[in-house]
Amino acid sequence: AQKVTQAQTEISVVEKEDVTLDCVYETRDTTYYLFWYKQPPSGELVFLIRRNSFDEQNEISGRYSWNFQKSTSSFNFTITASQVVDSAVYFCALSEALITGGGNKLTFGTGTQLKVEL
Amino acid sequence: DSGVTQTPKHLITATGQRVTLRCSPRSGDLSVYWYQQSLDQGLQFLIQYYNGEERAKGNILERFSAQQFPDLHSELNLSSLELGDSALYFCASSVAQTGNTDTQYFGPGTRLTVL
Image (tube, rainbow over all chains, first blue to last red; front, top):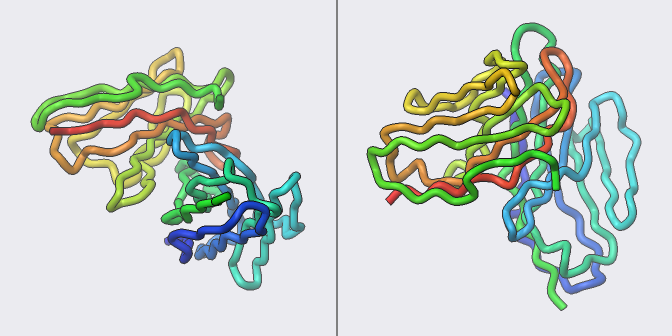
């Protein structure tokens, strides 16, 4: 069975600090997909990034960057120069590529609450 | 704005009652997913429909049912409600069907409170 672990329940930083959110996953499949979603205080779930298991290239998008390492089953997320607007709960999620019959579901971690203070 | 709409935004009802949550997917998306977010269980997958047919089932209670209509909107029916059913219910949609995994875009959610 697939599993996603976000060991950090809550992180508090001061604005402009860099912060890394950890995500460790378990799956038996060789083909899978990893995601990060953001849930701001307003409650909606906002998609941030998707990465497939064949692509271990790290990615940078503005102040966001992602470090995918298959060897350690980790998909960590770093925010550089954090801002108050980054305050939210961040979820890591895993989806297996089901080839026959079934559909496609996301397994979420428990989330990391990030608080960025002035 | 993800393009996925959910109504109502809030719902307050009593134990034993039945409610219907509605979801309209993004234009062009054929798959609809339902998730429940509660304090004790976190975000849990309930069920997926693709083009009107059930595709995958998660930890969905027998008291809950869903369907996807020909216009692709979906409804989640919750009956014999219990206090523990109070949660935020999300709908998501994607283009994907069997064998493909693409991004699921989430609606704003329906917050259900059972008193």
